[in-house]
Length: 237
Picture 1 (cartoon, rainbow, N blue to C red):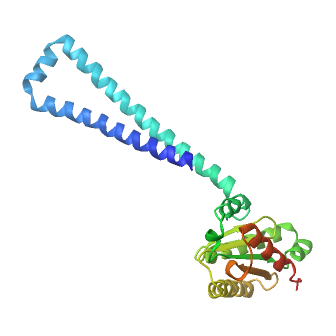
Picture 2 (picture 1 turned 90 degrees about the vertical axis):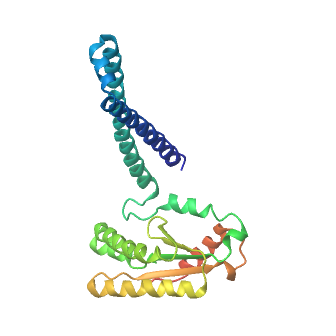
Picture 3 (picture 1 turned 135 degrees about the vertical axis):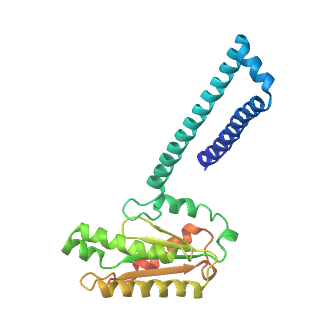
């Protein structure tokens, strides 16, 4: 966040600097065009000509360095974006990873911030079987396919991420039992369509959810643990 703020401020300062430099160049040119006597004096006075030449040269040099700064700033922004993706996004699926989830979880620090919050957990019930029969490459492909669907649908409801391995989290605020039902139904319908095209390796999901309003918990960690307990009490099909 601090890096983004610095880059934004630095870019703004450079834009102002560039506008000033270009403005000075334009003013010099307009003055020369409008004042014939000044042009004559510059080209007949060696000292004045040398002074103007050095001034224009340094202004031009300043513009070159400004454009170089913009080039380096763009390269820095691209590198920063790449590093941010590396840190915050899951390498396999491209959705937010555990680090991103931890950052989100830290925003729920009080009972007031948890009000109207819902937590959902999903796991692919047959992932272990796919890994054993078809290999981990097939299992990774299944995870990628699921996360593509999960992200497409989940982003319209709230924050989603991969909590590592075979665990996928959705946090919805504001949330209600109806919203959770809508989310699960929409996800299940998309999974059903996927399974019709992948009958040999369908995605079988386990899921559990917890609404803060329905439980006696005080922190998001408690809400998450409660949802975990519900998820892992569900037997595999």
